[in-house]
Length: 279
Image 1 (cartoon, rainbow, N blue to C red):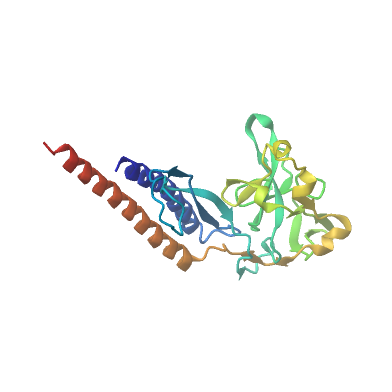
Image 2: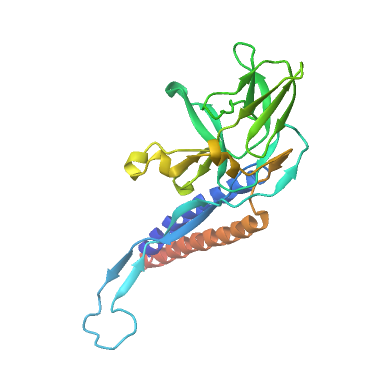
């Protein structure tokens, strides 16, 4: 009975993590560029008890008793499939039309300075830096990186913008002159190694050396002739790829599994009470 309670409590802890994953998916179902996560379960180790060695009966199953100790959340795998495209007709909105291509964003990293993170959220805006120069930023106010890895800065006398399919931002000034800036776009070669930072942001893990891989094996910067591979649509945003109906089904199944394990603990507690009550 104690083993039953231990197995059930182990599983309930892992089911709670799955509920958190489902809740996060549903909360971001309307977040542009968000990629859903899918929980995968695996069984914990079994304990083998060879308590019937004298039994010579031929059986199809191995001799003895195998007792499990519950299940664990093996991994929360990101679903990389393309989300639907929503038209906005806004010149600084864009969406990627190919999976695993990401925009480079420069995010403050506390005492470590700045770090490059990656997102598919394509609603961009114009802000000013400390020197009153116009700067291209995303919805959270983080600078957008150019092909050289630096923030995109230009004078304030801008008349209009236009995004090309190869990730080039065409800037038109009040005097009629134009300037073309290349946005830094990166393609994920091994997306399963990326680390989720927050919201729609992902980044390289700090332990790449321990994993035995290099940055070049994980990321591929689409520059030069490779920019023709960029899939981009101006005046639109990519919606989240969260399947609400699927998530609700998973939520119901997970809640039922949680209730079943909770009931198991209750029954085991009642049985222990009966045993302790025997005089």
